[in-house]
Length: 248
Image (cartoon, rainbow, N blue to C red):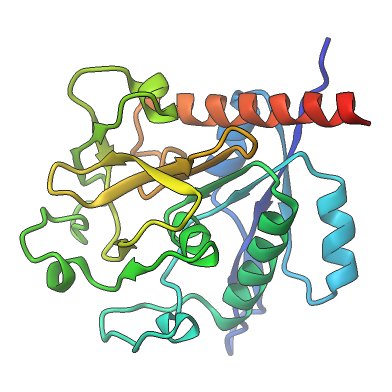
């Protein structure tokens, strides 16, 4: 029987306040979804030691990069838009180092929300900073009064998203105002909203398993079918693990 793969999950971070200490924390949905899909999730706390990070990644078979607030567009050569709600600086700096290392190792990776956006910019793509301005004809992709806000999804044939959802009407949760604009080299679009906004990406080569979803399949507002995305990711991680053992 094949051993379960070990998948890292980065943690969110909240800085210290006058009445509380700093926290590293994580929505349970990420770990619960990975466990249900057959993986062993391991939360990766923020560290500033490069050697510690490298050693940690040596122990992992794959990586999930979680959602959260917004990336600082100034770090990618763009101006700061007034709608941007920045990630904590400490988390963003760590996430960018972590993503660069994961990409350099070509580890199987699943980016969710801002995790998908970071994957795209790390590989050379860019982002819409505010959908209502950058794509004014787009549907609403965020309803602050309804955390379960959903919109339709159109999948591309021959992709992981097609294996997950098949044909028919699909609706996914939507909680974002930034989005992927130009897709990075080495990636391709696997699902869009009917308005054209990119909702999922994946690798366009067979030698590196990469997934990204703008929506949140781990969230309590997700459908039971969304868990299949984690199952596909874990299957991709296991396939890579088998290949590495054969090479060794």
